[in-house]
Image 1: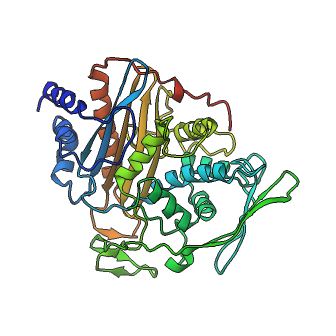
Image 2: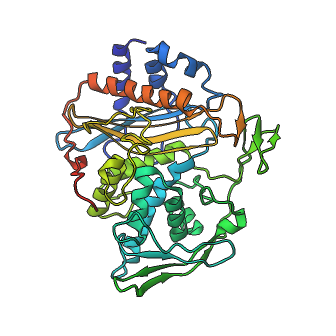
Image 3: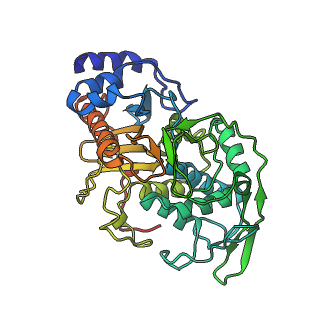
Length: 421
């Protein structure tokens, strides 16, 4: 299909699009836009389209059109959405961050906010204390510090502290109430605990400047009944003793976050509906999130990171790929990636402040040619990152060309990165 024909298709579909507000997550619209767009660049995408099932590719793209009042109107397109299971890895840290800020707002406890020192207690067998945060400005942990680490370098420990603050039951209840009943956050990340041990979460204490406890959240236990839909991946795996077991790897009891749900949650934070926002966040919460979701690691003082390891586009795969060059900042990705067990995923809002271009794009791909899991031999660099970069660039080039009735005002997303929150 020629690009002009694709544009006509889009114009037709736009008339049926959701106008300026986010409703329930659409299922696959069965349109051919994304597939046809990729077919226009066979050198980049033919091998991926040919093996789309074995690569477990899923894509969600949201086109954004602003009206005269700068109100966004959305048209969603998808490719193979929900066709197969994918492991969400660190993308789960994004909703945990949003919900942690929401829970603080709901507590409405004097002196307790995202910057309040938070100590994680040990409330049961194999739980740990967490009393310090060497990379924070004052050396103590807080919700804000953990969220910074999550978006800047995708820190697993930071995610686990938010998991313990929220609790498994709270997570399930809150996400279900927001229209995401399929999401199942069952486990901490990169910690060897049983399913039952993950149901128990630590007590946490919030402290004032004199190190006095001003609020304690007791230890929690979850009685959530998970679906445990049977899922296996691959041809074999390395077991705990580094022995090869030639049978598919069991994923049934892993975390489950459908791609469309993650995409929808990011959309809800980037475009909060003033009448019915998806999350109970303040204007300052949104500004805080935008700052650290889009920042390059070098733009953070606390925490401060080695930029040779954590380069500008570390963890920003859509549009940027594995490009380690210093970026101008004219194009920003407000995103959360994840990679584990061979699955590479990125959930992103891309904003080009020079050309006034914006779009939402989420995608996942399975990068494991040999089919063996837990062997640390995945194809992120050679298969996954090029795909996400080229996909992002293809959408970006399309967005550069398409005509808009109104130029978007993106000032709400322009950040002074010299300021810390």
